[in-house]
Image (cartoon, rainbow, N blue to C red; front, top):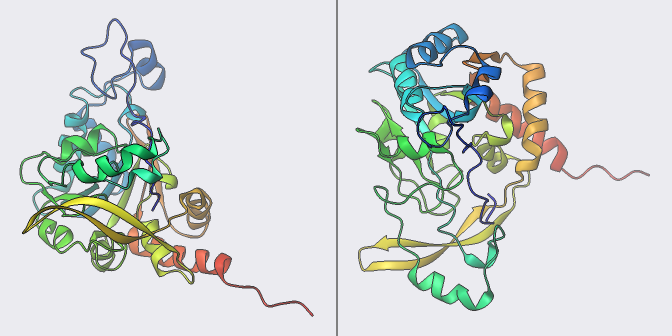
Length: 300
């Protein structure tokens, strides 16, 4: 997992003079008409997801780009209405709600901050609060979802996940501080339940489940991180171990997975969309990464 402070979310787009409001993900009229001539309503999202093969009652982890969909009345609310209607009351929706700003300032890069600020930031960064701490760099859909009625959010200062549905408590409870994308976190609980993955307008570079494959690969590497958390004694700055992820390899890994496994590929609105099982992806990813990380026999 990268420790650098990420740039601002990239799903925000500018509004045109005929566009309603100025919220994230709203496209100017010429822009959305060039993508799709019809509005991408919640009902249309539901129909497109069912046509793609998403079964009602599924356990689903979502990665998304609002701006890729076209003109969505209601923006992120419309997207979530369509998704939750598709899953129905027996389904569970899971969304990464990471808050990477609550990290050690010595590793911030976008932008970096002066070294003389580091101690002050570590001393006064607000402690993670699942109800109040915003996401960073995740887009407007995760940011809205974390506040949605009935949503539970895991207790991790940088790598939290939010979930709504019958399996929400099982997925979000007991999220370990160390190695949060590994065996003692929500990704492993999703693997146990053979969850579905939906890439809605994004590629495998945004596929968080591949971090679980990194954890299980032959030679994972780890590094130290720091965050502000709330303890029984009050706010504290704590250090813990995290995966030193290599997300730059994810697009090639995802392409190889799609070449050898069944992936449902279609469109939801204007967004290219992929649907597949997380367990198959992780198992393939472990083999793919291990084959590239294992030392090769020396040649005579």
